[in-house]
Length: 305
Image (cartoon, rainbow, N blue to C red):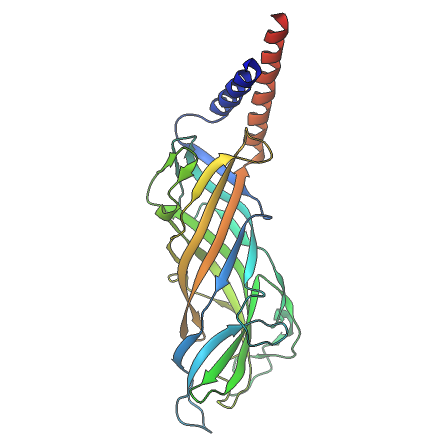
């Protein structure tokens, strides 16, 4: 019992010694093995594509995002998930509150595979009426954060591929209106605004019976107005980490609705996943050193008795 009490004493004292009682800037290192975001885009009905010389002026399609690999007709579940890395900034009062400020984080999506189109194969001199700014010269792939294949289904049930596309240079943002209260090990993650603060897309448009509805484009920078929104995921925690109970671990669950532009068409989707992070190494070292010192002091006192 005495040893357990001593352990609790040095653990709580170490935390209090390392983290001031007033709010201070605290940066958290993201654990890429536990942090991931998944992009989900449901089938989008009744979109109107570009005019076609061979067919009626407009062709209504159901737009579908599908896997690039295996060219199957199933849901988009391969290439739509990206591991995260970087740092999350906060103003933190241990056991009391945490706040996040937009634009202070370095949260990036890691490449998840090799997808078409390959940016290196884009040739700005290879132009035609549909692609005045150039085209991709081949069907090779290049590394990107996530990748998809866009299919269209006409009202008569005919399906065809419209484009291959990849998402790259994804950067994420987190903000709160003010400090969020920490109760025990929990905080209200629905008080956060979360989303994509920067993203580029590469389009490799395919020729279809309706012409080439989606043009070839390289490094299209998307507006972020529809890519950031209120977080609806509950269950945010700041709890002792599994590897070392003296080090806090923050877990931010994420579920946010987003909208982005696909060659002039608004596409709705969701971002789901989580961010798991530990304090920067400098704070971890302070916590561990304080814990070790107090444990040694406690052992010395017990021996003298």
